[in-house]
Image (tube, rainbow, N blue to C red; front, side, top):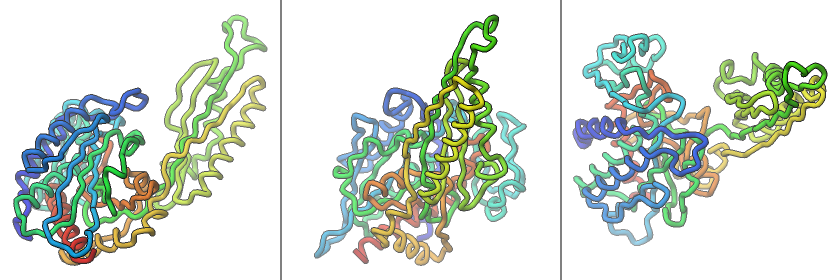
Length: 418
């Protein structure tokens, strides 16, 4: 498969895409939540049409759809394979004015980012760099995120399509291309019509590094606590004011800090993560992420919150706390069992390429978790992402090339072993 993928063209795609600001806007009333997602979607449709995918379309919700028909005869209907990535980037770090930096022939040094020299991608913190000497590393300039999450996935899928069109001898099943919006704020598949997609199996291209097949995600709920106090002018507040801000602080202080917190957990350990506080003396809204690989643990975390809230109500007479639990997504593994070929063929594709691979877990979620929950088995594949959501985000061109090559082999497998 040497030189099958046009690495220079892939790099050009990626650099072009990351310079479009597609930052998701949490709390927006529109979908997609930011205009840049429309802009990137329009660009992708134009590029897909130019490649010959005549049905490429951006729908009323900003989702991009396209189809590449099978190119082999078959006595039986071939499985339809969907490939999915998301257009938006995380609101945790700015995605406006991304200035990608390309470090060719990387020689193992720490990477000082020129827009903010205090931002340094250190080898000590990024051991993956040790295996990438001589490769091409792409970063931001340190003042923004890079956007490899998930524009690396977008670029990989687009380059795969271009490669398959250029090389019609490469066997492929019917392929469906889907680019979603607002994945970073949990709304990625909100408007995905599975009947229109018509897929047997799907793969999200939104994974870390190389050689990984993500087969489990957290299960996730969102806890929203409405903490209501009593406001009155502080000059006459004695015995009358109930300060919701103080009550919120007391509630947060009751949450575990030496366990069940993201800053002290790893692997399969779950957590409660208070991440947003808004309000004043009369009322405070507190958002807490509940995350665990086991659904039952989420109920335990909700009970822990309710217990803490009850204690705070007793501590602050007159305070009332309402707890609302919103299910977000469930562990990817629960649905993948319905279509074991999804993971097995991905493993076989790596084996045929002579590359190692690992079945891995995500301490987070993907569009794939929600698609799987809705009945479409969707594991997640590596696309060279590193340090997502951060000014220290980076990617490796050669890892993106490997992702394209893996997808070429995976497509062949779905033809050979339908």
